[in-house]
Length: 284
Length: 275
Image 1 (spheres, rainbow over the protein chains, first blue to last red):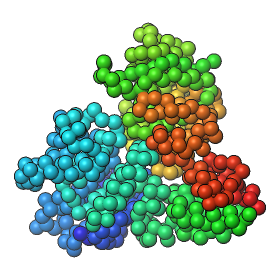
Image 2 (image 1 turned 120 degrees about the vertical axis):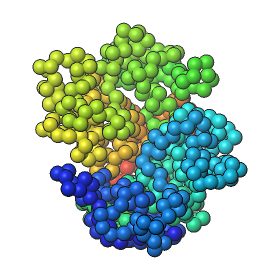
Image 3 (image 1 turned 180 degrees about the horizontal axis):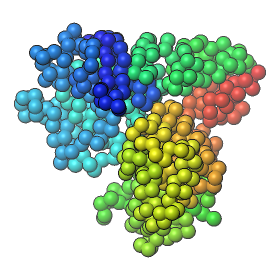
Image 4 (image 1 turned 90 degrees about the horizontal axis):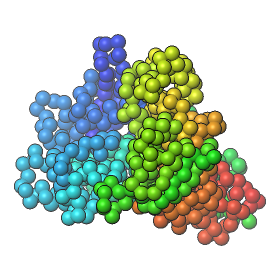
């Protein structure tokens, strides 16, 4: 499933003194199976962007197309949109409300007209994917779990619907390092199985490691759109605009400052290490 | 003097349950120290922090906060005043949309006189670098600014001890830097700071670190003592800072730096010293 934004504009509270233009002339296409990282400072329009893609907001002008079809057309099948595009909002753990984990994860499936067996197997699959022992957790209250665990339960609720596109808004903020890593590996696996991933994050290390492409918004406009390696090469310009780059990239820049020969597109640790070993050997 | 003395603290959310949120925790924080508490989700960090702020009373063990015995009911309000807590999401901490009203709220509840309130608000806003924002709305601030206002709300009560429970995890890099700088400033003013964090890079700023795992303390020490111990970090569910990882990976490749670096700057310095 491809996603296209074509000259999209969106303003909050139009026609009032509080009117603020959140997105200005945004155009880009995400092809099926891509893993795209979306970055930008707080308030740059990232969350507005995903709400437009999910059909929760309607653009003032321009169009949002899924597989070439305008999702805001009158005849567009909204049910299909909501089934195929799964959105994990910030703090998904706050959305838990059911009495048991099983019922919570199954909630959205009720509306798809699936059989009881199909719902149960989808729930089991989603919870297992998120690292839970289905039999152990199904009857527990979702509120008994810790913050990070609750988040994984909430995400299982999205995955259970088997979406083709998964949109994640700051999914790893507040997770511990191993939880972060495990979560990213899982998302990568979903991506390799063909799911299109759009992930908003401030964590440049995570995006450097996992995303193939980076889209950066600035003041509601498209600031960068390109291959991760190339986008992060331009460290000074990004930092000047309040965008963080990966630690490996920062360290590579420090080495370059001290006169070492380091490639500008060093963004991952493995790349950096290889070059540091070469430097070390050269020095000795 | 000690800001916190904890002896054998143990707590279960379901009484009589064997599942202990914190289990036999003992430590002492000296006045003016900056501590970082690290551990994976669900390890008991927040439960411990809530004890220090008297949101939870100890079930077992002893706890003295700012010289006040936490087991004495009469001390609960005094402890909450002496030990302020800032939470993860700044938006959840505001009670008013106008900044000075928001900051006044806590003060009124603690019985501060109406004459004194404006001055307290002013001083607190200055301390977090937000002077002059009294009449502004909380809605139009950046994430870092919001969190600084939340910190000011706690500071206005004039606590000796401040607890930060993952206060940077919702912020963009600029907001994080903002809030970390604010913490450093407060420490320079003599406040005792206890920071709960997932970011091991932030713990480098601390005087001492505590690693928690399944409610138990796995290690206490300076960042220089704790962070190079990869095995200990792994057991706690943490990953070492990149510089530490590089130190060991370089060593495995036959390149030995003089000391284990904690930051990228130290790592680059170490490579230069090979010359």
